[in-house]
Amino acid sequence: MFTRNAQRRGLRDITNAGPSESNVAVKPLSRVPAPSDAPIDSARSEVVPHPPTTARSSTSYQHSGQVDNIDARDSQDPLCATEYVADMYEHFRSVEAQTSCRPTYMKGQTAINEKMRSILVDWLVEVHLKFKLVPETLYLTVNIIDRYLASTKVSRPKLQLVGVTSLLIASKYEEIYPPELRDLVYICDRAYSKSEILDMEETILKGLSYSITIPSAHAFLVRYLKAAHADKKMVQLSCYILDGTLQSYSLLKYLPSELAAAAVYIARRAAGRNSWSPTLLKYANYSEEDVVGVARDVMREKNSAQSDLRAVNKKYSSSRYGAVANTTLSNDF
Image 1 (cartoon, one colour):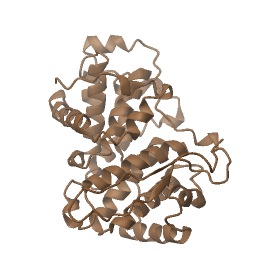
Image 2 (image 1 turned 120 degrees about the horizontal axis):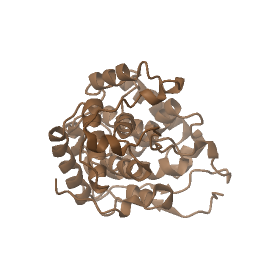
Image 3 (image 1 turned 90 degrees about the vertical axis):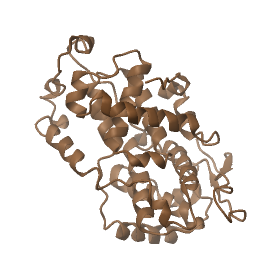
Image 4 (image 1 turned 135 degrees about the vertical axis):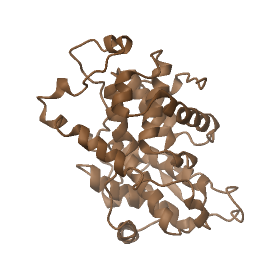
């Protein structure tokens, strides 16, 4: 049961992130999204990709050099759309550059910077977890924020409004039960009204020309984990690594498919498997040489991340996610 009296925390101070920021007002944020004192609907339980089931031993393909047809076993499942899945991912690869941002847009912003973006995303990871939303909602939220900031100057006091409104838009697109508007007002400690959020929703959608559909890094991750014959721990570890990339502005230089491939590569090495495989080469369409440089940058960013941005580590330190945040990851590639 979530109550009004639950502990609150403030959005971390974004001072020292740039010049003339000593007078930044910190907006307090609630840890709890339910002002009605009612528990969040369990139907919103966050979806973690399950390890693919296979009638054959996955280890046989790890060492034989054969290429597995990863869709054959699902040919009778209409939800897997095996007739179209190859075309779908080919399309995703063809459009991902158009729906992604590069780490240059902050040059056009005068009141905010990449550190403030990282703080905002860290908070959104926690809010996303509290609302029990599906992973795609988080990735779409961050994408909407980046694309909007790439085209529109935003003042410092409005950055959190952009963030929470982007979460609303993404939730409406991805969720069966999106958060209620009053709950979003509450998690911002009523710093913004319902009308302000709705006005910003219209502004963002117009700014993006109502283009919301994207091939996210998580969508690619699900495909690559299937090609990797991933077990539960590898799934959780890959999700942990990929979620951690969301806070990094500099990693926007990589395409979503590249980041997903790097997450699988790092997780496989941590699990003691071959770093890459013929099946991954076929379905990811990246060689090990293509992936290793991205993986190095991902690990470099992870190791240099701000110690006060802990939402992803806290999430994946829980038993629900296998406590994979405690796994030692090597960057000796």
